[in-house]
Figure (spheres, rainbow, N blue to C red):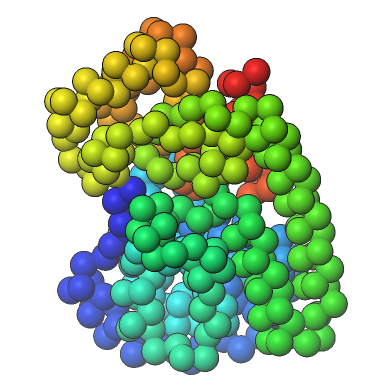
Length: 294
């Protein structure tokens, strides 16, 4: 997907505002997350012992269009722990951090816990769809909170154990999908869900030129669009997954073609649907994949 950025001039203005801000509050643990995906993970681990702020938290919002505010900079200045994706996904956080002057905050970037190469991250930075990465991030968060707030360390660690156990249940279901559907094929409009789909045993047939154009908000080359439509018409694709938060005319055309040719379609998102936490959301994604492939 397109990287989420904030203009430099805005950051400079925010830096001036923060430099005049009051001394940060010292009571309670403050966690700031780039999106509600990471905010939900933080809430699961911290429980009632922290205040969690997520900058992108509206399911109807296109994450690509996020505009950072002076308030966001102030939140980072006061944060004890900062959770973000990294890998170029939420670069607005890096820009805001450079002006926050909060060297004491613990900054956790999910990509650093993924074990993936720079090449892999360059091709697909959406590591919250990788359950192993989320497990490692959650465990690291629990230890960071235990260090910051020793009085509640046991609670953070027990929350992490429960979270890990529920993730394990999700991973068992993904393993079952892989056992039943290994080698079946998927086409995606963007690489957002590919880590989960790959773990489910699916082979990605998406032409790179297609997903790159959609990610970058560029027009899909006509020859590439023809290739995609031919894949759908030729019965080579077992599943289409599209990002419904960034749907445009070209993705709508592909979704319509898939339905015309009887290819099952699932919608995915980059942020949490209303009323769901991370675990419920991923459970629903796995259920949707299983239902589409049944």
